Each structure stands twice: as C-alpha cells, then as structure tokens.
Amino acid sequence: MSSTAGTPPAIKVLPAPPGLPEPLPEPTVEELRLETVLGALSDPLRLTIVRKLLLESEQFDHSCGWFGFDRPKSSLTHHFKALREAGVTRQRQYGLERRSHVRVDDLNARFPGLLDLVAAWTPEP
Image (cartoon, rainbow, N blue to C red):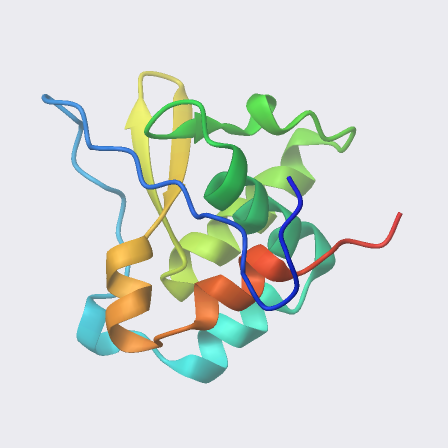
C-alpha cells in the first residue's frame, strides 16, 4: 500500500464481533508507558507485526500463522507476548489458538500519532 508524501497509510480498524473471549492480561490504558511501548516496537519483527495488523487486517484479530513468518513458534510466541505485555496488542484465546489485534483506540488516546508513525514505517527489504 503506498501513500503520498506526508500522508500516512490508512489504518484499518475493524469492529469487534460479538461473543469474543475475554482478553489475556494486559496493562490498562492508564498503565501504558511510552518507554515500554517503544521498547516493544524497537524490534523490527514486532514492528512488522503491528504494521501488518494496522494496514492489512482481513478480520478483527489474527493468529500468528496469518503473518506468514518463517520463524519457530516459540520465537513468535515470545514476540506476541512482548507486544501484549507492553499494551500494544490485545490477545484472546480461542481454544488452542491466540489471536491478536492492535489496541488502536487505547494507543491513540495515550500516544497520539504513534500508530501513524508505525503505519508509515517502511521495513528494510
């Protein structure tokens, strides 16, 4: 998805479907800390995860298999947990599968413009 200079790509925010499982433990909006969020986003793979969720989501939340990363499951589990514990993503357990989405409203309320920067970031080839 390309954008014109100065205009960030459009972030997709899909409505929550009814009957969602409760989210896994995460910080409240008031507990979100900039240094913790930036620390989680400092890893290029985690930044890629968040950017992909923001720009390419096909449904409300996604399992780690949707991303198509060629990484061991234990490595991906670590990265998704780091994002959730920092408050960047929200995860829910669906049977044996965990699905994630970005906490867009919470992060925009606490750190306006941060997600626009993530969406505008271009990964190295």
